[in-house]
Amino acid sequence: MKSIATLTMNPTIDVSYDVGKVQHTHKMRTDNEHYAPGGGGINVARVFVRLGGNARSFYLSGGATGPALDGLVDLHQLVRTRIAIAGPTRVAADILEHDTGKEYRFTPAGPHVSEAEWQECLDRLAEADCDVLVMSGSLPPGVPDDFYARVARLMRQRGVEGRGVEIVLDSSGKALAAGIAEGGLLLIKPSLGELQAYAGRKLEDVTAIGKAAMEIVEAGKARLVAVTMGHEGAVLARADGTAFLPALKIDAASAVGAGDSFVAAMVHALCRGDNELEAFRRGMAAGSAAVLRAGTDLARPADIERMLERIEPL
Image (cartoon, rainbow, N blue to C red):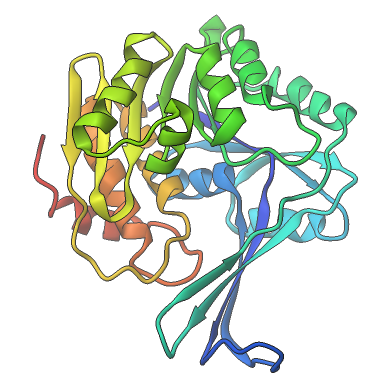
């Protein structure tokens, strides 16, 4: 089994509450209060470790809220490398309204990160000892758009016993575009909206989505492109062509962490030697498992296996 590290440049303290009815002005009493360490890479590490893998979490943390994030990471028994910053770690809220079953999500932009701080992050990553690095989530203010591309370039020179580290990228906008332009990626996992923004055109159907994803593969930018489409399913592009999996019919209680769970399970399968299509199936199962429960719990192995039984082999 290969080892991974994850990078979270803009982590969160994820807090979730339940409330009877959302109303403006009024004080709303909540229940079912939960706190969890969040942000793309940390979420990936949480699920990857649940599946039996080894992961080290690299993340930025600072301000009055930084120690709270560090404590939550420790509670989840994640091996961590914390890069200290001056700005406060952001706090994101997920509110479930019982009356309607609707979910409300509030996510701040995150703290400003100085050049010295993001440069220190590069320096710490240069010491990383792993087979695969998963870079997931948004970049906070102050970090250059090509930061993930710089990391990919750096990690090609690293790796266990001198082998280059394989790179997985799950981001959006300019950060995603710069990472793809750098190329040499093992896997990218854009949502449909993120792929459309990158391609600069509307992708009307599965054929068009597969074609846009294959353009990235054929250009040698990524070995695998997994496009998640919510209730419409997912598409995988690889050298042998494209594959499509329809979404499972389930009652979704939350949308939090579905993409991160997908990445964690797919990367875990690849790291243990599963073929690309089986890894894709497991990613789909984990994404489905993540939405079964409200809040920020992410996918759990037993739920993943139950979902996997419902997905036809490819």
